[in-house]
Image (cartoon, rainbow, N blue to C red):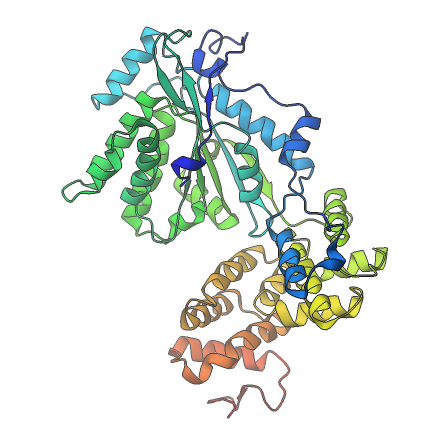
Length: 474
């Protein structure tokens, strides 16, 4: 969650809206007008450039400068469309939430009293979803767009609302693999507390408050505070919750959207999409869908990203980006933006550290072999069209440095699930082999290792199987 010092507070100014249901609604009319494409691109782009005095940098400074590309934002054609869609959903979310009408005041009282009744007419807050592959920039896109908005709009008593009120435009909640329904509620309440100073998150963190108490309190608070939009990131992690916890989280999302009438934005992997489809009988509850996958070779957006990344070379004699080199870069990164930027970061560092004056094809291949060890199994799966396996391996990589045993266990589970063969099996074995001497494999994992060993070409130093026993290298 954002800290208070990072929040953007702006005085509310009102722009007349002619749309029925929004006209005369001070909360809707206070939302900033849509920026032009030119202004949007200028504000959202965060591209790094090679310093003009780079030759005067020390080797250490050059390497650190190379790393800045990982935090850059180079907007593609998707960004402005997503910005327009998010802004539309945000404003339309206030269609039935006009604080000046008796109807909405009555509804707020009903929610606060816990007497919400089902209605036949559609009165949800709207929704929008961003599902796709890990590493393609879903979170970066949404973060870049919502960061253009103020966190809080300050309404004065002298304005059309008629009283002092801090309007929370959006709240972003990242769902971790350890979050239960209560923790998610407390995260959102903590954000509200930073604006209102009420301390609800502190009160409801005390023992004695059940999950249902926290959910009810959050629904009431969000209704009375007229939150503009709730953004949930990494929603695939809901699948890691216990069945009852998972059910309660989906109930929370449903109630926020249906009772509090707040637009819900969901961001996650393709596994999240399957999870939501299984839970929601009506897929329309996911709202406006956005499917974000890896780029195809020749996609104009991909070519723009590669041109930008290739221009960021901190070496003396940069080479030309030829069509052949464009194809090589695609083959090494599979059209995944994270991998593209990581490739350029690491090739720059390698060239600087070794005193090379340019980044050539050999260096690109060397970095792929040296620095993409963990990513190679995922990229091979992606090239073969196994997107689910790609996401599973990508997520497992997060455990590589934290817990080697957990990393090995996840890779073997993925290998068993997807029955990897050939290059996939070889890439997996390269990752797990160094840790098997100290790893206690289960019977199922031993069978998986034997199968992987049979399905790849082994060198004498690699793991071998005689058909009955697993033979480890000494």
